[in-house]
Amino acid sequence: MSNQPGSSTAAETDQPEAVGPTTGDGAAVETSAVDAPSGEAPSAEAPAGEAPSGEVAAGDAHPDEGTVTDGRPEFAPGALVLALLSLGWLAAMLWSTREAIHSTAAGVTAISLSAYALPGVITAALVTGATVALAATNRLGRATLRFLAAVGTGLVVGLLAAVAINLTYADNATTNTIAGTTAAAAIIGGAMAGARQARVVGAITAATLTAQIFVVLFSRARDPLSDLFGAGETQQSVLDAAKWVSRTESLLAGLLAGLAAYLYLTWSRRRAERRDGVASPLRWPAYLVAGAGAGLLLLLTEVIIRIGGRGLLDLAAALSEADEVAQTALGTSRVDNGIWVLFVGALTTLIVFGRTLGPRPVEDETDEPAAS
Image 1: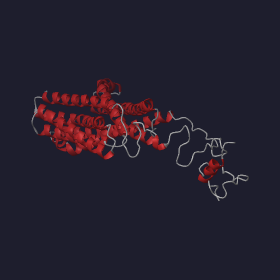
Image 2: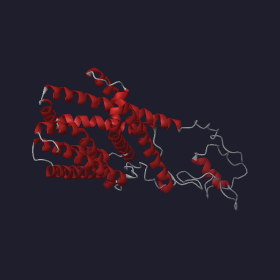
Image 3: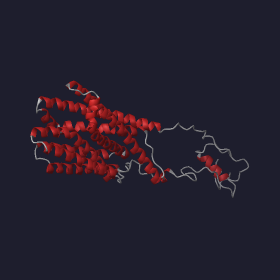
Image 4: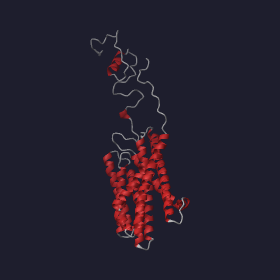
């Protein structure tokens, strides 16, 4: 029988019951607290349901802005900066495409250039829809509300881009195809931003922006590299050299995308630690998805093009037999590029993340009670 106050056994203290070593035993804690002599502090073991002295209970801890708690979405730091960069990038892609189309005197050449420039515009629209939606919904805590707001933000971005295209491009079927496909890509990007793992989405957009900017800068080195890889006067040597140039570009783009994704995730964790003193570490699958994200977006771009922009691609391929071969080769090259960036980026991020992991600490025997 327990020594409850006021019971017939409350005064029997000559042979107290032994307190078990298990700290989670509620009876042992209660007996220790009751049998403590007057004027002495009770046992250091806290009653069940209360946190020990000096520790914060789980329900009282303030989650940092990068932690998913109770189903709430994460906070993506730097989303506003990414949104501004992606908006500038989308505007630059739309402007360069317009200038290239308007500089051609013949409509046939304009169709070919539109089909050639469409992938870059769609990728920029995907990233812009995601980053603007992240910036607009970063403070929303409810997952459902955040997803709906992200899709709505992507819709607004897509409509604005479509209106800008229709107002500045020539009014024809080609322009309508570019506008409609761009709007659809922005909506899909906004839906991506509604995911709970906002830091991973932010890392994917940062990696994709890095890879796309590198591709534009790399274009200046294509001709020297073609000569280096043996491009000569024969058509076969030119094709072989172009293949090696494309593989070099994809390899370097995937490497930079993987590094950018890792750096963003690391920076977001350190920012949360400086702000709140604690941050939730991401496991390796998050780094894997972030590193592969740029390649995934490139492959998603190809899917959107082949569905929404199929009419433009078919029109460009029907111009001549050479245009048909060129469009087929370009489509194959884009798929290969996306696959290369996907695997190289994922592998780079995992390798860099793995090098930061130290050896697992040896756990001492903490189950045994401390000597009284």
